[in-house]
Length: 221
Image (cartoon, rainbow, N blue to C red; front, side):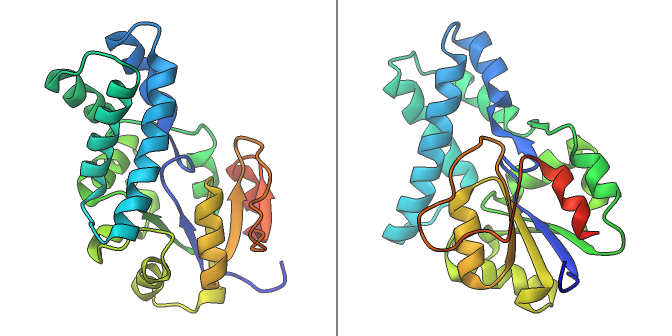
């Protein structure tokens, strides 16, 4: 790499943790619908965060996630109960992390390591704590601190201010193409963790690196 980086900043959902690990509990509660619930829930979760940002109607990501789940169940014409919603929301605090995550984080040397997420702390903190990864991170940064969702420039500026670095000192990782384009536009160096084998977004903001999973980051050590 041409210039050393000083901080590795990780998105959380889909990058470190598998959001679709909820489908196991969803299948238990709604047989033969687990996969469909997981997909519809995630899609609507993202849509609601974007819409609330555009409409200036911010609420914490935990509320966005709950609202998206309710919509997904209704969309699929499934019976909605508060008990089932509570059970599925609890699973979001215990998502599986991807198998390579811990090993990669251990090998990243003396760089500052942080997570930066649209997730609110009532979701992020218990998730990271139960995963056993909490000790790997120097910072857990949430957009909830400034009520501005990614991919707004203000959200990335909040992360940068928290880190106390220059934009070019930061390598930002995400599995979400929209998040990579936002970070690239802001001036971060970017690594797209393209777990789904998708094409690069047609926005003229290509990532600096593309990897199938986090093990590719070891070349930044």
